[in-house]
Length: 231
Image (cartoon, rainbow, N blue to C red; front, side):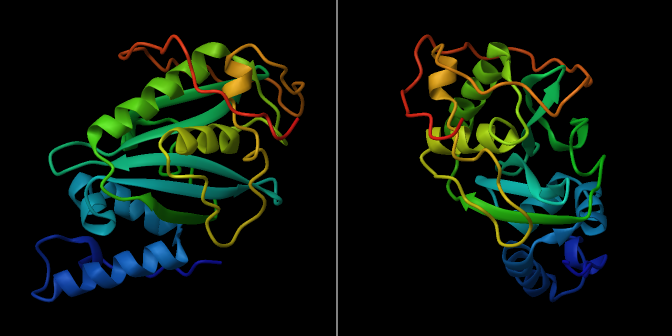
C-alpha cells in the first residue's frame, strides 16, 4: 500500500526556498510509487497550480484505483498549461450501459477519486507534450462512446476499455501502472462496437446514477477500425 507522505510544503508553490527541489522529488515519487487517497485529496484541494507543479504542463495522466479486490478502475486526466483547469474523463455503469463523463474540471466530476477516495491511488504520466488539440480529439471520441450507449460489462467492457480506446486513439498505447489488480477489459478496444459490431452481454451491474456528458464538440462520422480482442 502506498504510504501517505505529502506535506504542506510539498505542494505549496510559494513555500520554502528549496521548494523546487521538493516538488521535483515529489513528482518523481508520485510517478514511481503512486499516491494514497488522502494525499490525492490534499493535492487536488490545493488547486490547479498544485497539479501543474506535481505533474507538469501539457501531460496526459492515468489514475487507477482498486475495485472489487481483483479489478481496477481507470481515469484519464489532462493537465494543461498554466491558466487552464485540469480535466478528467471517466467511465461508469448506468442501468447496464457504458457511460462516459467528461471532459470536465477535475474537482467537479462526481466520479472523481477526490470525491470518492478509495484506498491507494496509482498515478502515472502516460504522455508528455500532450497539448489541447490532442486532448480535444480524445474528448470527441469519449463523447461518441457515451452517446453509443454500449453494454457495460465488469469483465470485458468497462472504464479500462474506454481508457484503452482513448489512449490508442491518442497514439499513447495502454499503460498498466505498477501495483493493484487486473485491468479487466483493457484488451477490448471499442471501435468495432461503435461501428455496430457485436458486443459483450450486460451483467454484474444494476441501477446507477445518471449524468450528462454534454456535447460541445461534434461526434465524428467515421471512427478508425480495430479488432475486438475480448468478448
